[in-house]
Length: 470
Image (cartoon, rainbow, N blue to C red; front, top):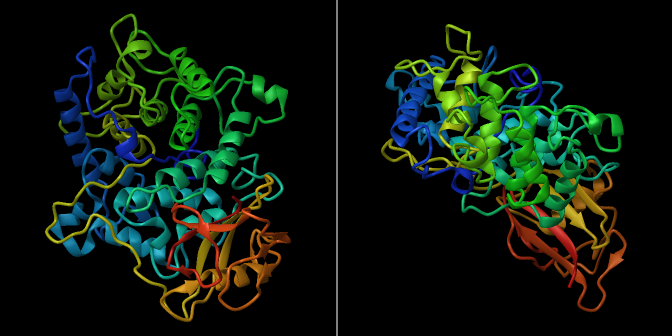
């Protein structure tokens, strides 16, 4: 598997909130001891620190090691504490945030996985993804790629990985208070697409399989199976769910008894094993016991640790390699540290550095975007990114809906709003009128749904969900 679209793999690597997905305590039966894992983490962090550019960067022209933020967080190191030569002014978090805020990032022809990658890594670095700057809202950037003609997919459906990593990013990168930002209707739509793409053997690969019997019957990929099962679990699907159980069985069937490695589509390697273990971690499935302890007493974590050079800390890609490789070191460390596909940033040790940084308010006159979903209660979910230029430090729901009516991406998210002005309660949206107890309600950043009124205050980076119902 190549990492072309997102670094070195075909599209993305990602990580899921560590608090929910990390393996915090390993049982006595585990073959890699807590001490061995602690040593692996310490040395792995040392190696990843050596990848930092002299300007403090992990991403930029010619440098694309930003997935290190996911591994740092899983291993307990805050990105703001990672500095070149001790120069705190060039700490990794600040430099990464500045990059994401630039208008030229990510490129002149971006794809959805650019924003998913950034969302997962910004979150792990302690940057609120929806409030990177007054103009950069990564959640809204992802919403732009909703496929209105194939609801539940993000980006072209043929590139199924874009939908998997949308689930990982939108569910894993929670608010700074730990709240899932997106509404259940959106989560369910994406879950349904992930389920529909599960192959007959229980796994997944990067391409679309839904509706294609030949593709569904094709062999799955270890890497994407790890990511897709993680996407289900981070979306709220329990690890007892039949589809997760089938994915687990698929991975079990790929184990090499003598090493504990997974025999991936392109052979045994650290990256594939890292993705698979991160998938198990995200689902709360211990990769060192039960189905993943081989007849020879080996586990996938054993294999990953065997790939690490110590005390240097880097991981090799292939067992036959004689030098560490950056991506393998990132994927290997994150998995050994118990991470899924993103992790809650740890508290920094740098004096005065906050756990999170975020744009505090809208900036009058600075164009921004907001993430909006509209659920009419009939299964007709619309999702879009709304561009607007605020005239103050906050705006209103009415102003957002007016902007969406004038133009949103994708189009058609909002076609009509009643009332069309003023500050009153919404009585009709997209031709659907309030009826008895069934009225339009609004949720912001995952809050409880409440009566939707035009004068509802909307702040920078808010993720807005409108729903018709009781």
